[in-house]
Length: 317
Image 1 (cartoon, rainbow, N blue to C red):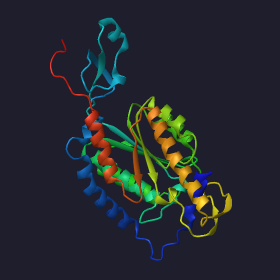
Image 2 (cartoon, rainbow, N blue to C red):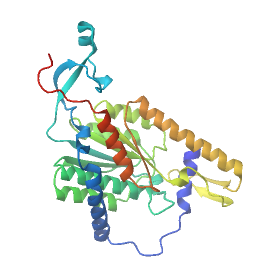
Image 3 (tube, rainbow, N blue to C red):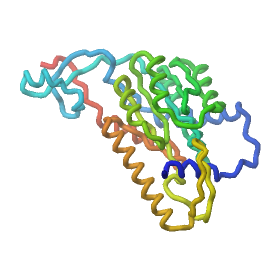
Image 4 (cartoon, rainbow, N blue to C red):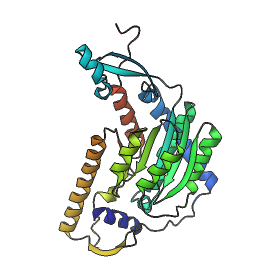
């Protein structure tokens, strides 16, 4: 399977020559970088992309251009002979949950960042955005089981703890258990939240998990990728080991047919993921270790803003 090959390729990276920075240095660098990016990502009206669909039903009003079709109240529409939509009372604060896939495939990185490091940077930006907006933020890290959980809370100390957890976590599992993450969240997270689900989505089963989560929360899949998952380097015969399953194989990366088949399969998988997200009615974010996450988040929030229903002031008539 091509997803197995993608994970195998992560083992080709040489070990770092220089000693790794201390935890304190890594945390300071991550927070400083994320703090600069937070202004760009969460400035202006971006935060309001999650406003206007609170937990409590408020009223039914006549449909206006720009309203989301999924908010149509079909019973009232049938009685009145023209479309009406449900509106909801806004929340005074958001609850943000960061669900991060830390399985072995997150160790792939052909450039400056591994996928797990990209996930940490993105999570830091979102967590600091929640801190800035006085919203609650929590973390669930999972592999084939739950590796870490921090319940949603406010405060700088809590955000620092969340970032330290991401930087120091040494997962016990190597596989990917989407269903385990969903079952755990169902037990420990009460009430609706905005849930960013960070994964490479290489393993099967994610669509079922996202469907269950989307029934209770506002879910945004964030697909992490690396250029090496899109194209094989032509370096001849290579023996590779899947970091999640331990399976091994020898492939000829110098063979153009092998590389072409791999590229076709990876493109088909990416397209299938997008189709799954759209079938579930979920907005998604695609981020790469090559480009980073800032532009992707900006595009996401800008698209959400453009589709956000206009508010109506005063009586609906």
